[in-house]
Length: 166
Image 1 (cartoon, rainbow, N blue to C red):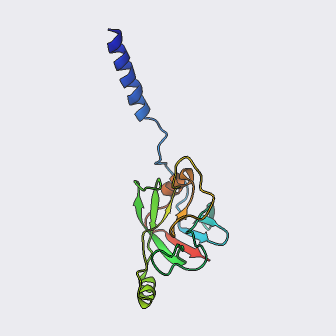
Image 2 (cartoon, rainbow, N blue to C red):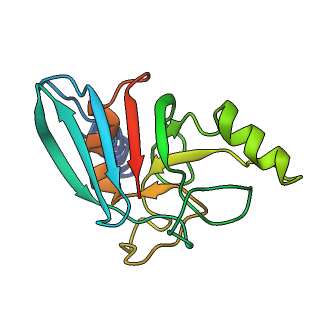
Image 3 (cartoon, rainbow, N blue to C red):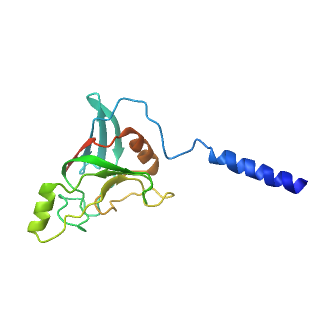
């Protein structure tokens, strides 16, 4: 009888734990985000709405942060105006929002060099959930902490324009 109670009690605790409100999927009820501005030199990202900055974040970039991304593997974060074009709730880097790089101009430039422009540029969380990244480490993406990414993921919709400045 005691064994049965222990098993049922353990199962109940496990079930209640699964219903925990501590989830990576947050809710956002504020004004809509109408644009994102990234200033690479400042290592800052701004979410804009209602004609003002709604939230700003410290960011990490590609491991070769200066200049516009030209070809696959150069470690640079692109510069220009793009859009958030996809959402990945199962990213290796917690959560991620895809950026519409490369555009036609990026593709043409890379081809003129006889190379691929690369792709899969995202705003995403950290590479390791227990350690906050403190350097530029991505292959061209924009990285924030996992907690910050949860809020960004809730706030930013697919189609939102993003301007990435030097």
